[in-house]
Image (cartoon, rainbow, N blue to C red; front, side):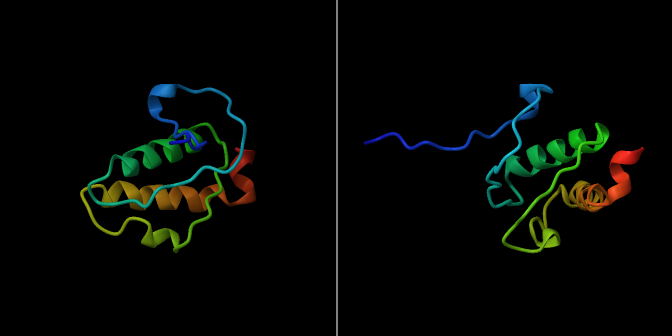
Length: 92
């Protein structure tokens, strides 16, 4: 079978490297998925470094992850994403 070109998911183990901005596919988040932890880590890293992160999703942001043991952390993540959209975010 021919090999399909795909987008590479990056994780916290990749360290902090400059990456070319571009589209990344965010898989559907589920209560039992490691993807939720990775997404939270990405947002935290961008937030701490004052790097705005813009996310486009097929559902409202508050519908991406609605239940599971990371609900509190994900609410914080949503709050940080909202703050990143403000012009003053990069001014600090």
